[in-house]
Structures are given as structure tokens and as C-alpha cells.
Length: 247
Image (cartoon, rainbow, N blue to C red; front, side, top):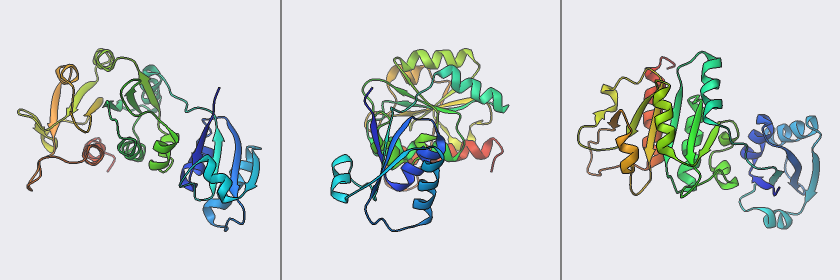
């Protein structure tokens, strides 16, 4: 199976910390200046008995750009099942807290969303297998390595997933500026929730919207009508986190 190259200091460190991938080799730039992050990367690699190789920055450039002198050669990103995400919430004794991403195409938006999702302790993220950004090394880099800790399920049919979550008594909450949508602070966000976030250009697709129990929106006071998808997602995730009593 082909591997991947995780690049950047934070991304590499979090991949080593998470211990969810098989890691083949750690590549470091020659004469790399010591720092607490580099020291921790080296310590983790030695604990895991990973081969460490020093090469020129020009050689690292062939593996990845923006590497900051650090590249990990790893196996593929380890996705999970919907059932595993639900079981994770159950083991923690917490109502499920999930986001479902409706065809997010921009890797930078996906990476930013995963970073926030991990920060607020989401149990998992659901993404479609087709017509959407996947969990690539670029996404891991943008997430500052948070993607290595979050549980992600890749599914063939988002609509079927929403129906399955409803059967588990999970509220499906769509994030969209639309007539009839509740202001996020007026909605009850304390129970089992799957927050659905639409794509950057199209928002929620029709079938996805129809399968939401209700919609929430972020009130806007200024002249612009919308926020970047990852910014809007981050704001509502923190509101849910606060409503659930973790603030």
C-alpha cells in the first residue's frame, strides 16, 4: 500500500503522539536547529524505534513543500466507522457530538474545521468519499496535526448516514442562513447532536437539508451575508461546546 508524507513540525509531532498510523521513517533536514518541538519529535521517534535519516533541504523539498525541515513517511490515514464514533461517545459517557461535512472541497477549510473539532472534543467527523476534500497530508498540515487525533468516517452516502444517526436519537442540525433557521443562541444544543455544514459555494444540498431536524444560523450585523465555512463552523462548535457545559 502506498504511503504518505506528513510534513511540518506540528503535523509530524501530532502524528507521532497519536500513534494511529504505521510510521516508516522520519526525515530531518541537515543542521536543523534544536528546539523543544524538534526535541520532542526525536524523542517520540526513538521511543517508537522509527528510522531517522538526515538529508539536505533540497532532498526534503522533493518529498513535500513547507516541511520546516521535518517529514514523516507514514501509512495511509486511518479512517473509522460511524459505529466506532458512536461507541467512542458511549464509552466516555457523553451524548454524541459529531459534525457531518456536506462536500467541503477546500483542503484549507477542511483542515481548519478538523483543528477546531479536535479542540472542542468532538467524538468524530463524517465526510463523503466522493466530490469532497479527503484527509491528505496538506489537510493534516493545515490542521496543525489535529487531524491525527480526530476520528473521521468516510461514507458513500451522507443521507443514509443522517437517517442512521436519527435512528440513534441524534438531532440533525443544519448550519445554514435560511428563512426559518434559528439563531444559534436560541437553539437547544445540549443533547446528542450531528451538526451538518454545507459546502463553500452551495451550502447544504437539498436532500441533506430535508433530513435535518432544524436549521441554525449565525446572526449577521454587518453588510456581508455569510462567513467562510470553517469560520462559521468554528463559531457554532464553540457555542455547542459551551451549551453542553464544558465552558
